[in-house]
Image (cartoon, rainbow, N blue to C red):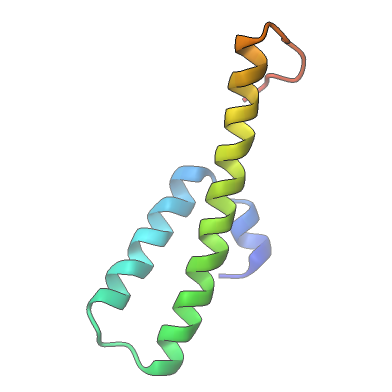
Length: 73
């Protein structure tokens, strides 16, 4: 999965893709090259999930503090 594709995923989609990668790595049937590729993809997915969570946290903080601008989810 390319970085641009990852950026288009929702949190739920990215988390599901991350879980699928972890299952594949747990099966221990991947070659070393496949494992490295999957690991790098998992890193990108994890960063994307963290970014989305930070954005959601900011929106919640803005809501709690009474700042109603730009709260579209």
